[in-house]
Amino acid sequence: MLALLNEIDDPWYWLYLGLLGQLIFGARFAVQWWASERARRSIVPKVFWYLSLGGSLILLAYAIHIPDPVFITGQACGFIVYSRNLVLISKFAASSNQGTVAAPTERSPRSEENQGGEPGEKNDSQ
Image 1 (tube, rainbow, N blue to C red):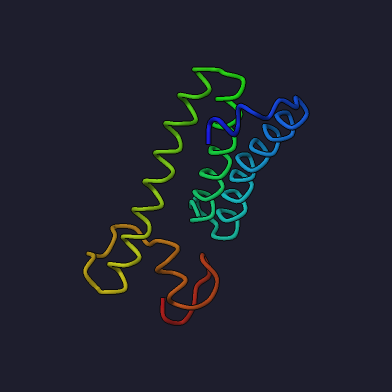
Image 2: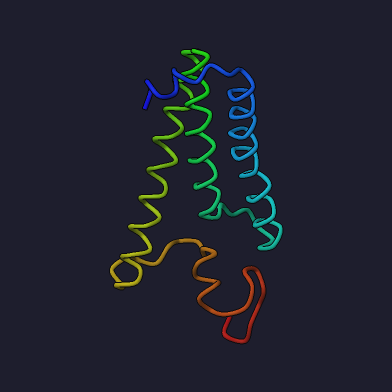
């Protein structure tokens, strides 16, 4: 894959790729803000981690191309963290469906969604 990236010499391609990565990576903040406003509390939706992962991967390719070791290190480490969070979310969801996870100390958006209504809204069962 690195050999393929090194064969692309068009500076406009790399500029647009870098900007695309930054746009995707930055969109995660808007998504998190929107989700928190909807829930009326701070939450981090699953799509935040997907945007982090996608933006980080594109920015990592850009960082390797320019080459900037500080940028490469930052994006590579972030990529690991974002991937791990998605693995943890998947494991929690799978074990929650099987009833093997203890109840969290705080109410999660997932538990509110399962009760019906929008996150943050009160319903008759609460």
